[in-house]
Length: 468
Image (cartoon, rainbow, N blue to C red):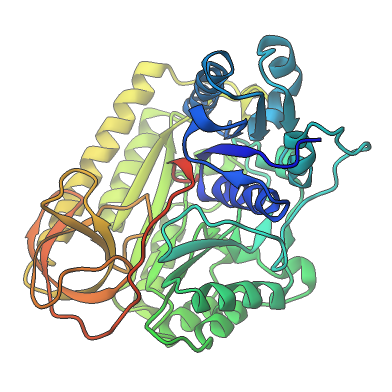
């Protein structure tokens, strides 16, 4: 058994995958192993994969093959593949990529230490997995924000989705477990916590709780902190957005006024084939209720174009809906015909060129909406969470308004500041001076709080995609 290893991680996919990687890293560090961001210096490389849609699957395979090269030219002795790709293609990976030494499924995260140390994994079928507040975890995000997974799995019957096959039935973490972890993170200096799960709005139903997410948010908002904090949740299911939930978001300043609610489509016929129900008309009424209850709320959604049976008329209905809904942020996915999904058996498939053109048109509509929304912000002031220097140039800083979630929404660029130089992890007021299609530019106003100077130390390479 290897007693001290240098281990490198590559985590692909959505934030839910990232948390799985953080949990695996935490277990390895707790056993005395060392993490390295340099694959050529690692003894073991772990690739945590995603296979939800075709581009994610291709990225996962390409990354595995890239990491396999380090077994030839570096000190790497083991290559371990984890995550959704393992659940879907375990046998194919073993057969076609012999460089892979071990496989870790989504419910086998506790086996990562044994796999890295070269021991035999436990026998018997894996049990549904969900970490808790005592599980060791190493954050791979910058120190000022973090994700907390409050639930795992899904019970919704969406025909395009394969998550229930690999993640299992919906299951919530215990209430106090989430509160305990959030309290610890805030005490460590985290300024923003993002609650995630396949469907966070179902939180607590399996535990017998009514309005579980609303009660959890209220408790999280009540955690005492030395500085201002932000709390948001991601991935709301539309028919689970209750008035109690909306009232709770409106009532607490630390609950950011932001709702990420993937709607997938607006045509009733397409939604019926997706096994989601509802319609654009129903959604517009819900959006009106959300905006009436939470003044200034930002709403993000995502759609799938090219779903089997989507006619030209269905797509036109979707376009008209987007123009009427005026979303703050929107993502468009092209339909991915996964052979294990129930939609694979549906007829009336849409050809690739049509799907591509529909995505471009829908995004063009949203670009105009986003540009108009951003122009309306010029001259106004908003709080921003300072992220650090821009990835594009050292002449700009980046931040996020409460209406911008990490990784998936536009950025707030800082080209000037008053008072002290910006510091990563502080929350300051910003005056918007310019507007672009998806980003805004502004001047940071003088600070009103003192924050610790964070020194970011990313431990893994991260590639995030917005969730459907």
